Structures are given as C-alpha cells and as structure tokens.
Image 1 (cartoon, chains in turn red, brown):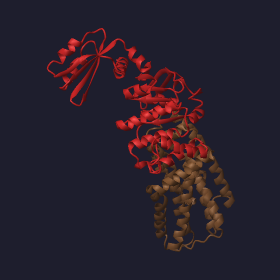
Image 2 (image 1 turned 180 degrees about the vertical axis):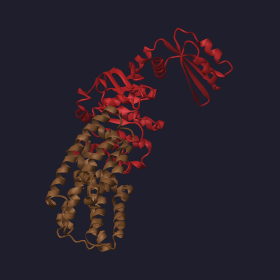
Image 3 (image 1 turned 120 degrees about the vertical axis):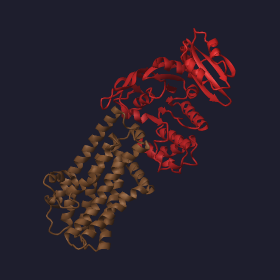
Image 4 (image 1 turned 90 degrees about the vertical axis):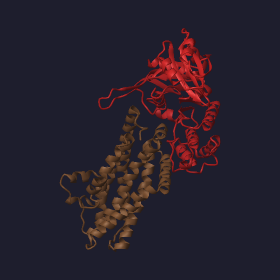
Amino acid sequence: MVEELTKVFPGKRKRPDKRAVDGISFHVKRGEIFGLLGPNGAGKTTTIRMLSTMLIPTSGSAMVLGQDVTKDEVRIRRRINLVSGGERGLYYRLTGRQNLRFFSELYGIDPHIRDERIDRLLELVDLKESADLRVEDYSRGMKQRIHIARALVNDPEVLFLDEPTLGLDPEIARDIRALIRRMADQGTTILLTTHYMFEAEELCDRIAIISNGKLVAQGNALELKDSVNNATVIHVETRDDPFEAVDVLEDTEGVIHVNYDRVPGRFITRIQVEQSSDLLGDVNEVMRGLRVLRIGYDEPTLEDTYITLVSANEH
Amino acid sequence: MNIRVTYAAFRQQMTHFLTDPQWIIPSLIAPFMFTIVTLMIFKDVDGPIVLQAVLGGGVLGMWGNTLYSSGWSISYDRYNGTLEPLMVSPTNLMDVVTGRSIWNTLIGLSNAVLVFIFAELMFQTGVGLSDPLQFFFILVITLASLASIGLIFSAFFVLTRASSVLMSSLEFPIYVVSGAMFPISILPGWAIPISYILAPSWGVDAMKIAAIDGYTGIGPGILGSLGIMIGLTVLYIIMAKWFFRKIERNVRNHGTIGRF
C-alpha cells in the first residue's frame, strides 16, 4: 500500500532539489505481478528502493506486508528481496553456490533448509551444472539467473525486480520471464519495473505508468488502452526511410506522437493522433513519394498508450 | 552480534583472499619489504633499535593489512554492486565487516609472526623474548585494536566511495603516531596526545616492555597499557556501531549506496 509517496533528493552545490518521486499512490494485491512502467529517470527505481527499504521516503507512506518501510525495515527485509538488472550484485570470485550460501546466511536460514533450497533454486534457474563455477566465468544470462536465485534464498513473499531483463538477449530474456511467471504462480508477489512494453503486457496483472515522478495511470493492460480513448493510431509501412515525413508529421496539428522502426525489408511508422482529427489523408499526402506498402488505422498497443500518457504528462 | 553472519563473512573473506592475488601484495609482500629495508638501514646497530625495526615491520604488516582489507571490503561490495543486497538483507552490516576483519586480523597476525621469524633467520637480529606467550597475547590484542579502527573506516566506506582518500592519507600517520617505528617520545609535542588516544600505541608500548630490556614504557606497565588498549578498543567498537547505524540512516536518506 503506497500513499502519496514522495522522494526528494537534496541538491548539492547550489543545484536544485530533485523530486524523483512525487506523491504516487497504488496498491499491490498479494500474489500479483505489478508492473511499474516509465521512461528513464521517471522514478521507477527510486520507488522500488523505497519499497525495499533501501531509501527513506521524504513524505507519504508505504506499507509492505503490513509494515512501514521507514520504521520496520528489519522486519520487512526478512520477507522481501530485490533483483536489480545488469551484471553487478554478485561476488565474482565466489562460485554461484558460494554466493547463494553467503546470502542465505544473511537471512539466518537453517542449514538443512538452506542446502536443500540452494539445490532447488539452482535447478529452478537451470544452473545446477555450473553451480561450482566462479561467477566471473558466467555469461550475462547466467549471472542474471543466479541473481534471481540469490533473491529467492529467503523464500520472499514480495520480490522486487528492477529491470530484470535489461540487456539480455531475447532468448534469455524469455527464460527469465518464464521464471518470473513461475514464481508468481507459486504465490510470490512481484513488483517489476521494465522498459519493455511486451514484457509488461505478458507478465503483469496490473501496471502503473510513472512519468516525471508522477503516477499517470494504472490498471490492467486493457484498462490502460481504454483509458486513452481520445487517441487512435495510423499505421504506415514503407519500403523507403520516412524520416523526412516523420519530421513533418511531428509538427502537424492533431498528432500526439510519431515513432518509427526499421524492420527487415521495411519501415513501420506509427502515428498517434487525436481521435477527433481525421488525418489519414494528411498522412497519405506527407508520405507521397515513398513506396507505401500499407496504410490505415490500427488499434493502439500498450506502447502507444504508454507514449500517449507519458507525452501528455511531459507536455 | 550474529555469529552465523560473522562466520559466513569470515569464510567469504577467506575465499576472496585465497582466490584473488591482489591481496598478496599488501598482506604479505609489503611488510616483508618494509622490514628488509628497515633492517638494512640498521644493519650495523644492534639491541633495542633492531627490535624496534622488527616490531615496526610486524606492526606495519598488521596495520596495513587490517586497514586495507577492512576498508576495502566495503569498497569491494560497492564495486561489485553487492552493497545493495547486503543492505536489503535483515543483517547488520557491522556483523559482516566484523567477520571479514577477523580473517584480516588472522592474516595480519600470521604476517607479523612471519616477519619476526624472517628477520631472525635472515639478519640474525638476536631478538629474544623472555616470555613469548605473553608477547603473543599482547600481539593478538593489539591486532584486535587495529581491527576495531578498521571497523570505523569501513563504516565511512558505506557512506562514500571517497573514504579511500581518508584511508590512504591516514595509513602512515597512524602507523608513525602509534610508535610502531619510532618511540613516541621523539614525536613532536602536539602528536603525543594523538598517540595516547590510539589504542595500538598502548599495544606497541606493551610489546616493547615485554621485548626490550630496560624499556619502561609510556604507561603503567604491561598490564596498565593492555588495560588502556582494551578500554580504547571497546570504545572504538561502540563508536563503529554508532557510525554504522547513523551512516545506514544517512545513505537511506540520500540514496548513495549504489554508487561506485
């Protein structure tokens, strides 16, 4: 339960204070996967750090498992754990098993339970064969898997995952997502931050979108898409690079946001426009001269919704 | 204090030491080099000055190792990104640092003993101890006092990565002011009060009383110096505990824990 949670980092050397999280409120139900989505610097990691007791909020309140993150940090820490994305967070000179054993000791796990749990976790993350190799010899994907195993040594009731698939190749990221789903199925409450829309859509029961430290929307993926009912999307596929057309469209009245990607053999441009504006003809006009493969209205995806909400908040 | 956490940290530090060659230089090679250089300077002298040199080499080994390893153990966590999972665990960070310091202390102790044996074998220093057991006991307590200073340094490493500047700049002054190499009596007057508030000064004093004939010491004999050292060490541990608590609160407020 998070109520009006705010974190302000005091400015140093005459720099202004930084309001990283600005009065956000949300509630995560037991056993659900709750996603925090937002651009870089939106306040996702700061939020997760406050909830995992690493940071003290400036104001507002946050209760994790019925305990106050400011005052009851030791009680909370016994029942939660945290995984940060990236390769850091492990002792590289120790083996995977030694890392798990060390972190188990920090939680005072009974030795019998500890050894059995470590074996089970190594199996869960598919590292049983590599358990006695030093972590410095692990690939990036293996490091991320042992990270997750490390965070499960205390059998946490709440697990905070801060961009757990950051920088991983698609196959390993898919394995990690499957692992997260399995943990949730076993009853662990998961709070996840991610940049990847498909990941949020695939995993999260509910999602909160944060921008500039503020919570701009929350709900399940469908509810979020419905919440932006004043926007629609024009989908254009071209053989030629539409970068000049994109520049023109960005300045066109009624256009909320334009993004385009290069995929093998073509360019995909998605133009979010206000629903009241009929811009299909204008887009056709701007795209004249390019080899257009397909053009038409499309249903907004979670990414479109996200961009609409974040852009609206930033402007 | 959580014994299991402390023991786990001890084992972890031992594994790091045995698998990471970078520890060998400050822990084993540097004190030997220092002793060799010192003994070569004093090669034409005998008696108490030689003992002072041997003692200086041994204490340097203990102090350098304790300070370097204890201070850097937190720095190493910061570098590895393991300070965050340590902070998120329900354990007291000081228990972890204490376990690591105990390992460092043992290495420092073995290092000091090796320096004494080496000096005797290579330079025939002729240093004889009337009561080796008593000397060894003082050595162990002195090491514990050095480790307690290391604990205070560790707390500052939780606060900021810039603590390495503090640690590096204080390594030799503390070594000199504690009287390990030169008698405290020849230090400038303003430095002597600093010597008195440093627990290792009293340990070195007790060791000298035990080893050097005719040395009367700066304090009230071996037992007196030992008592003062133990008292100061307890005070340092209480201070370290207080610093750890305050600093943890500080980093939770400012969010500096993940920086490296």
